[in-house]
Image 1 (cartoon, helix red, strand yellow):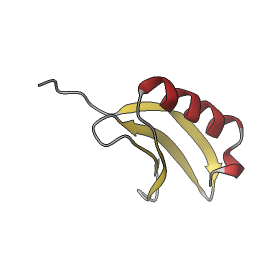
Image 2 (tube, rainbow, N blue to C red):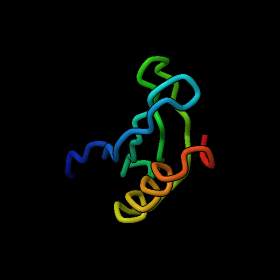
Image 3 (spheres, one colour):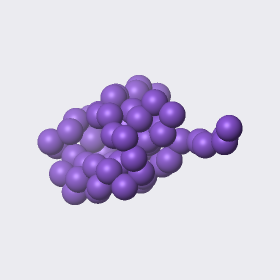
Image 4 (cartoon, rainbow, N blue to C red):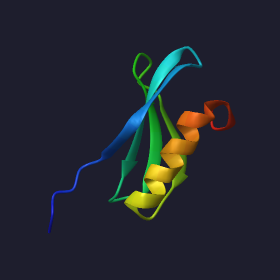
Length: 68
């Protein structure tokens, strides 16, 4: 059994009065955004592998208004 942690995929800044870290959990396949100031967690999707999670993160970073 491996100890795999969460994968951070970058930040979305100044959206909804916060900066959001994009994180994918390979154990649950859940992709979230976590607010730096508010500590709110927004579930943005479910992705089954690292490559899909990375592509999803890139879409969010390029067009955050479509996801927040």
